[in-house]
Length: 312
Image 1 (cartoon, rainbow, N blue to C red):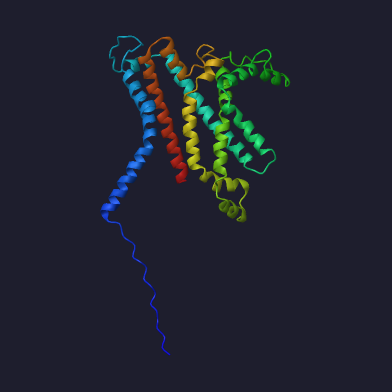
Image 2: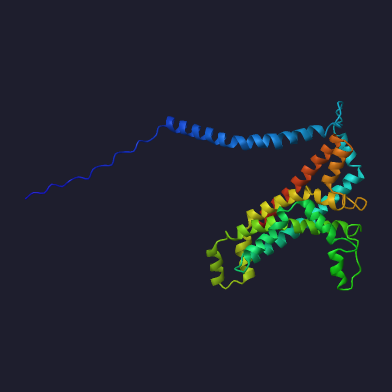
């Protein structure tokens, strides 16, 4: 009895796209990509590119909301170098950023690490820390005005329990700016905590368990595993913090109006007064350009620090 061996059927060969078909497909994908990006690009052009170009041009003029204006070149920048109020506001803003940014980031990270543990009432604590972020700054400033009230404020009431004399927090040149820094640190914690908490939950559990099996302490696990994993998030928080602190305005405007004297005068407040009170829009535009340059410098320094930390 003979048997016939059946040969397996060969698969139908798949049609390989030609170079022409591939080129058409890529062109279609590019057109789709640009179409999806168009709304964002249009938004950026209208609300970022055009205003930046306008500020750069106006900073070279003496425009003041009038019908006539003249080209002054770098005259506004030369005047800024001799402007005592501008130099004071620039220094106060830089000092505010130098103090508020690292302290708020450190506190936010510490709180996020605590909230990342299995504790009772975790949802309550997350909400409580985030509430100041979504609360209007004017409302926050009003509450802190009461806290700093020399006569009936909570701050002096608390210090009196330990025998300290009452302080004129916002009226004393020595404590006015530090008092605003405290409010700025407290107000900005919520967003940073949420971002850090999300990043901590993304840290590899396998690496943490491996470090634990190797006998690493909690601090060693944080330094060698958790901290390196937070690199990109740290840079993002730093960038947003730099931009936020240099744009501080409403808090200062409501609580001190730049006083006492000019001890809490910040850069955006000075720009506002020059532009909308003194109607010197060209001069205020030059201040805005200076502010953008300083922000870019801070971001550059932050980038260098991140690279150094990554290389280590």
